[in-house]
Image (cartoon, rainbow, N blue to C red; front, side, top):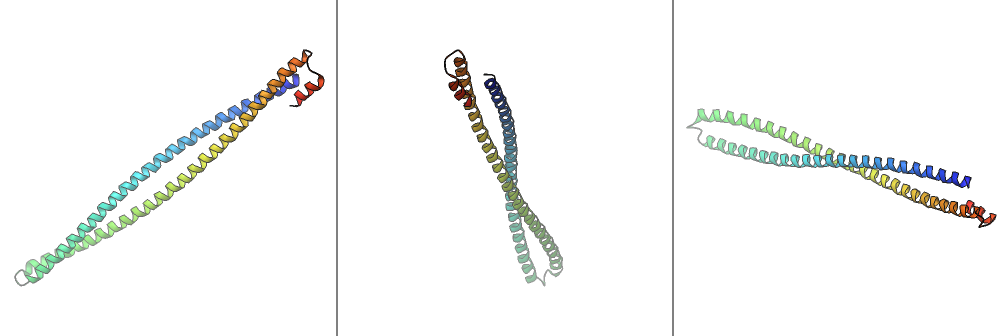
Length: 192
């Protein structure tokens, strides 16, 4: 009976340790969930930034188209001024100089806008890569935690079953000590 009591205490200590470990793992899972929520919020922020970048890209495209229309208009104006060259020579020269300046400015704007567009596209690709990487890490972590929890549940259930058997054996051994049951019966109970 003493050894059974000792075994029962050991099993209870093991159950206690497993409960503690289960509690710690539940805490880790909660931490993982918090990380998941954080990463999801980051992904949403990145998606919002991507949407904003797409809107900016659309506006830049419209601005480029508008600038091209201005250039086309100015080219037409130059042709008109050339037709009226004899009458408006002095005025034509000043307008041509002005048009050249605007073309240079527009070319610089187009270059700057093109560079900005390229930068935003590269940033978008990088953000997508980071998002996918973070998602993979998160999925792996969640799977790992679920596997650990399942293993702990199985181990806990096994220990509960073992504990129940030990308690039944203890109760049976207590009945056998009162005179019922033989020595061989008790030995079978202890071996379980």
